[in-house]
Length: 337
Image (tube, rainbow, N blue to C red):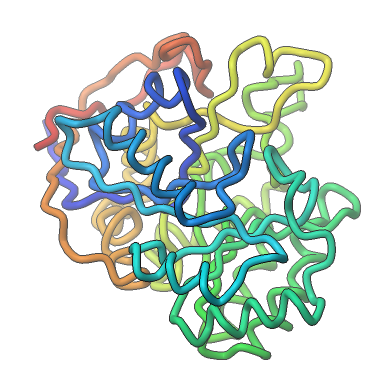
């Protein structure tokens, strides 16, 4: 049986929620990843450095035996000051996450208008401090065009602040790839679900609420372009799962919550995808090396070994329903140390 050992796998976009949910879902990431970028859009968004540090403490307390580093993020809002951003930098918080108001879960306190004098001043301060801008980039337009329509905002910020590192989170539209090629300070993350699924999987037959996410799954041509970038270990792209747990009742409801809980499946399904395309040798760069370089992360030392042996995806994990529930995958995790 073939084995594959990944060194320092990193998840550069993760939702852990809080309270009991945090305790239930964290082990699926902490057991298998050296670290993860943890999003700040909780019920009460993390708008101050002290709130972020308090949340970080709760994460660390929930996995005291694991070698796992949560890379924390501060919620971007229009009242961010030089003092707050400087304090964040001092405390090791390097990523500021911007959500357009109402664009996704927990974004009600997001920014209503991006390119205002106040927002641009904050971005200028971030550039001077060497902070990273992480963005959920969607307009309020037609659902399949929202990411594309928002690309002009990325362009304007990238041009205005050429030394500001900007991350297009969870790219879902093939046209986003051209932008990260055009601007030296634009980078991207890719999820497992945008690499595997299209709109047809979401609603082509019966509606599958456990594949509903934002940005929504797109067309086959988008998936093919994103796969090509990931399988080729594009140097400006990191893996970010956007694993986002919601209770079953919140997903299977008249107003189903947006978010896919993929944390328990990530490495086996990624190995299966890369193997199927004959690119297994590029998985290390996609899930680790690129992120280390782009975000300046020092080696952390965790080694995760996958075994090419069929395993079953469970129907639910701690009460959260994954995609592919009840199906079999060609790889399983053998060890993590």
